[in-house]
Structures are given as C-alpha cells and as structure tokens.
Picture 1 (cartoon, helix red, strand yellow):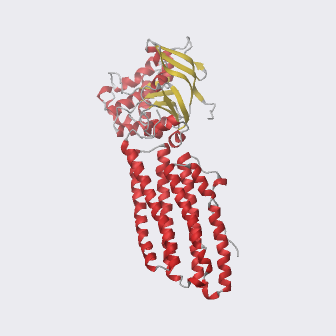
Picture 2 (spheres, helix red, strand yellow):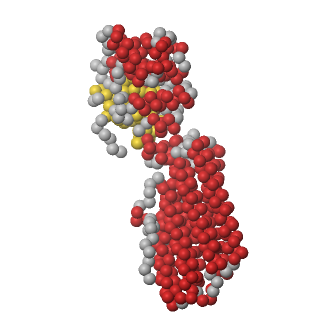
Picture 3 (tube, rainbow over the protein chains, first blue to last red):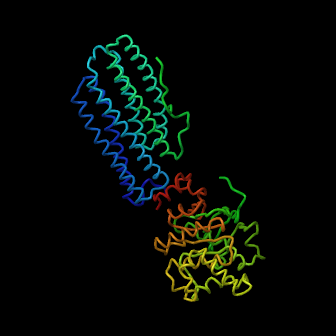
Length: 234
Length: 256
C-alpha cells in the first residue's frame, strides 16, 4: 500500500515546486556569498554592485515560497510529514533570505577595503567562506533528500566555522594593534568574518528544520551547533 | 501510550465476523469519558463495524458474530443479562443520515424519556425536551414550532434533532457514525461546535471520513485499516507526526 505519491497528483507537483523554489533560493544565496568574497579579493566594485542588486531576486523568491506555502496549506490541508515539510520550507526561505542579506552586506563593504597587500589576514577569509557556504549547500541538499542524518552532520560542522572566526578575530585584532593605519579597513573585515560566522549558524538552523521535517522530532541538544556565539577575547 | 484510568468503555481483543468474513481483527481500545475519540480509516476498514459493537447495533445483523470483551463502566455489555434497550439508552447513537421519526419535533425528543420513564409528568417531560434541544443547539430555531414534523426541518437541523433525541435519555456515551457527511459546511460547523460543547459531559466516539473534521473535533484518534487498529494516540500527534507508515500514508492522501 505505501507509496510516495499522493493520490492527488497536483499536490505532488506543488510540493515539488516548493522544493524547487527553496533549491533555487539556496543556489542564489550560496553563489552570492562566493561572489561577494571574490569581489572582495579582487576589489571588484562592479561585481559587488551586481551582488547587491541580485539580492532582490532572493527576496522575491522568498515571497514566492510564502505564497505557495500558504496556498498549499489553504488548498491541500497537508498533514504529518507533508505539513512539516511545508512549515519547514516557509522557515527555511526566511533563513536563506537572511543569508542573501549577509552576501549583500559583504558586497557593500568591498569599496572600503583598498589596500589589499597590506592586510595579510584577508587571504584567510575565502577559506572560511567556502566552509560556511558548503554548510548551506549541504543543509539544502539534506532538505531536498529529507535526510536527517545529513542534517545532523551539517550542524556538527558549525564548530569549525566558529573556530575559524575565533582565530581570525585574534589575528585581525593583533593586526590592528600592529598596524593602526589599517584599523578602519580591518574593522570591516571583522564584520565580514562575523557575517560568515552567522552564515554557518543559519545553515545550522536550516539543518535543524530539515531534521524536524524529516523526523517529526527536534534535534537533540548535543547534535546542534552552539545556539549563540560567545564573543572571543583577543 | 499512557492509558488513563477513566475509561468509560473498554474493548478488549474484539473480533467481529460477518459470516466467514472477519471484519474486525483483535482490536483493543479504550474510550475515556473526557475525550472525543475519532475513528478514521478507508472505507471497509471496520471502523463503523467497531463503533456498532459498542452499543450492540451489530446484533441486528443476523450473520454478525463477536469475540472478545466490551465493558461499559466495567460491566460486560454482551452479558446475557444485559438489557439491550437500556444499553442503547446509555450508549446513544447518531447516524450518517439524519433519521427523525415521522412525528413532531417535540415527540422526536420526548419519545425516549417517555419509554424509559424519565419524566414523572408532562411538565418534566417538556423540561427534558427543552433542555435537550438547547444542548443540541436547536431550541432557538424550533421553539415556536415544536408541533411541526421533525422531517420538515433542514438536514442540519434534523441531525441536531437526532442528537437532541440521543441526549434526551441522558446517555453516558454518544456514538456518531459520519454525522456530518450529508450536511453542508455551515451545518457541519454547527454539529462540530455542538460536539465541542458536549465534550466532557459524554464520552463521544465519532467515525468520520473527513480528516480535518477528526483533527478539529477529537482529542484522541484511532486509525483502522483492513479490520485492525493500526495506531491510536493523541489527535495532535496522529496528524503531525504519526508513528506508523500506514497511518501517514492514509492521512497525507498517499493511500489507495
């Protein structure tokens, strides 16, 4: 008797559409973070502008997800795992939109970082961003596959991003103390590092929702990433 | 699953046969005074058959045979000494299709109390009729035409009249077999509101095909499939996070 398809085919089509929108949003947000880091590295002002403009597309997709989710709830009255998935999609869309905002925020700081050669820690940031973006990517893959185990695995990786941030914080503060002329620019880098750290947290949030959608229970405390980040001391 | 000790009806290892066909297979389920319990499942799953064992309505089917125990307040309802008429007064029933007697509205409600000798005089009888019609949410609509025929009412009003009729004999349990399936959404909402108001005063067991209705009116839900009880639990759990794959497939519309 059990099958994965609904008797009403249109229901499957709409759930599929919802997943598609989330995947599309996630793809754009990942891409935006990567592109923002690239624009930062190359001091590409034009690229930074494109990222800021592109964020509107992510915002529009979030609205589309909301409309479709509300429509599905109203017209299909989803239950059990269907209901959890629609609710998760609604929340995930909000989180991914936020990740898009971080990309935009990083892009906005691009013009402020000019003297690249003088700021050695700049070379470490892209590696941190790769880690954070990969978390987002894997959390959304877990959503598409309804894979609770993969979601737990994503959460476990948040610590790495946090460790990255901790060490970057110390390096940047040291750098500011040694090169007071660069304090203005390095402070901007600190914000960027913080943004990337938040991206990791949001990927963790997505993973927690994926877990809930897949299992109907909340992830055990020990499997979650740190709920809030404690400020490091230099 | 935690089971409280306030069980009104206990069904233990119940099986029902129609001739050689087993319609219910070894079902154990308890009904709590405080709850509305919804029985859900696809057509032919045995939920109505099971409901009808609770006040021995299946006795009227010649080929039906029942095994197992069903007790009402600890009393075996299938004991030969059980008075079936008395039992059905204690365990009232409302059917899918409203079935008022072809008599006046007043008589529809007064009939039960009269034959059970619940009223000492006409005044008391009139009080019971009014109280029952009020509880059924019908009084204001019919108080000026109590002598009109019950069959002249709308479908939704007829169904509430049947509920008033069931209430009039002061039952302990009310069984409802798809009480809204012949009603429009407004009449349905009124019945659901009524179930909500009756909740607590009577143990209520309702069979429904409407998943949303089960979710709206009940605190406990039992899912039947192919004559077996697949899952029983708090309604909110059944509809958000069912434990059994078969329950999930059914309530999410993946069955069939």
